Image 1 (cartoon, rainbow, N blue to C red):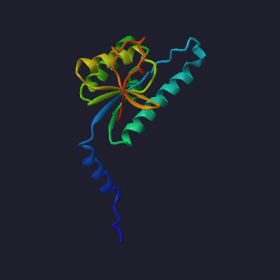
Image 2: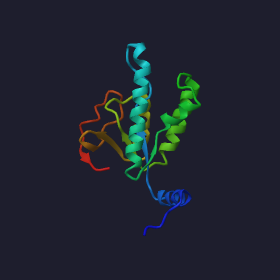
Image 3: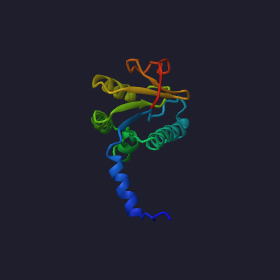
Image 4: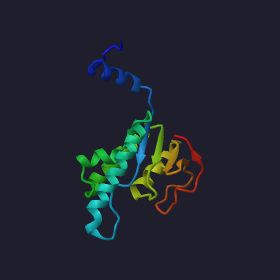
Length: 155
């Protein structure tokens, strides 16, 4: 007969087992870019959904996902330059503690560009997630870059 495990035991076991899991930085756009301003709320919602889905994907595969653009805008206004800069700088600090950065969007935004360049500066592996799987990113992080032209890897 299987021993029943309490919720408290599950929580404790999870905390202990997660100590060895790598942190991965989820890099995806936040701000809408559509020229049609009326489309911005839906685009923002889609961008947030993409980040959430990427976090779930990472978490169920044994990574601890970090997506500052899901967290910092909860208390910092991305439309206020000083608060956006503060959020970006805090995100870059968190990035430096991660073992990898995953690009999960075909489009590189200005914020993503800064994150990618920071990862490269600190020799943090940058991978692109596509329908075919992970690919090593070898670009320079420019917003005009096409990040889908690299070598396929595993997570």
